[in-house]
Length: 179
Length: 202
Image (cartoon, rainbow over all chains, first blue to last red; front, side, top):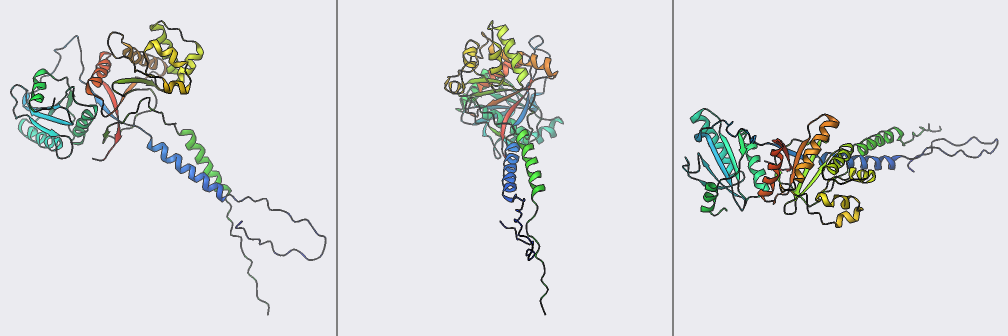
């Protein structure tokens, strides 16, 4: 192939020898192929690793249901997950919320702003971190739950729990047409 | 005066060493690569910004998709073998050694206990066509609970580590299904588990 014959002219005269064939094989194409495969395997192995989000649920001990620490209503934000990828949030208890229930959506301009604002506000007012209670309704989908946990992770609120929704809160969702 | 001829050097480079290295790397990547496990149902995992990578051993995956169907899979051939035997004992189904071997290479299963034997004995095409209904999650038969419970016991016995449960759910799966599965996990005091998500930017 690309190899040049540099062996020089043969000696003149003498016996006629059979010309020795070179034993060298051109490996360029083989190396090309090998590196192509290496690249392929390298890319596929690193990309196929699954990412996972850890979730710790509050301990549900049937024997000792009272073994729970009360948290002041002023520092709990309840997020109700409704249908059509919408949510509703309020501070305090559902029967007498400290802030009017507000409908919001997931994402940068929705609940994330609220979480950042309220987290700072509650921290300044009570000196303790905000506690978020997530209550997915039956009309919400798995993605909504992931989205809200993700928003909490992004805004660095580590105190949250997923709790079953109560009839009062379902009524709140129904009032704004999210159930 | 005759001109001095400069002897031309060969332009060929010895590729042997490069070829060696390339194939060494290739072998390494082929051996470490894990074949992509196909999901039993199409699952579109929701996106999140988490970067934590799930471990590859001592792990069980609950795949949820296709309107509330649940599939259960656990990693490790030895663990799978023992798990099937124990499940057989519990539900009074005898599995032959060849059936156990066949189960050991199945990444996940999603049929009620009464159909497990039939499902294991199907060949590849038959399994694809088989209408898997998912493992029953109701509390009357308690099947999913037992699968998880036995898998945890077997893993504990074999590797001495706690089995990590991951949930791989479809984005549009309704929350009550997820709630039911979380309740099953909490019933056996598994309060910490992982949710598999795909990657997205903030």
